[in-house]
Amino acid sequence: MRHYLYIWHDPVERMLVASGIEFKDVIPALGEADGIVLRKGSAGTIKKPAAFQTLARQQLPALALEDMHALGSHAWADWQGAPPASLDAEVATTLDHRGALTPLPALQGRFLAFAHDDGWYLKLFYGEWDDVAALLAGAIPPSLGALDMAALQQGGDGYWLQDGTVQVELKTHAIDSVLNRRL
Image 1 (cartoon, rainbow, N blue to C red):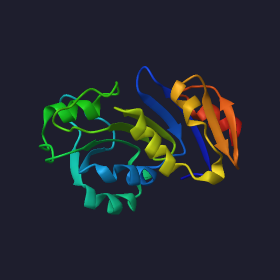
Image 2 (image 1 turned 30 degrees about the vertical axis):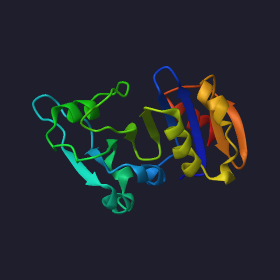
Image 3 (image 1 turned 90 degrees about the horizontal axis):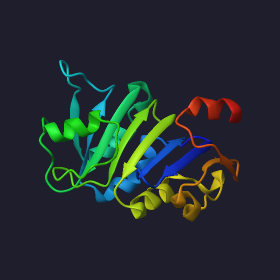
């Protein structure tokens, strides 16, 4: 976790956008999942599809030790039950797509995440708000400030948390504009 958090929520899209949450911060929330499907690096093309990796829950702590920031972009989705086939077209399409979380019978997961420079930009789609609330409860240290989860759930504002204070912030995907003003 970085020394700040920028976050906002779009309840219609069931999407969070954040800066300051790294992959290792979400691993505790993945404890109920049987594993994740991970795409390291940028999305592929039709002629050259991206490579995917299926990782069981037991492999996630080791993944947290990797330099995820060095990957640049990555995407992941959690899964329940049997591991998805590594070449499952439905899973591959989902991890290459930047749209809303769609029901994936093959995964039965709770989260679909797209990240760039681990900790700098995270777009997290979810199925149920309670799962997101639990993820954030474990990922946001109290030293950053007490985020009003009910207000975040409503989706009206963005928030900046740093040094124990919470301030209202614009909702934007342009993370650099927020960080340049704040840091």
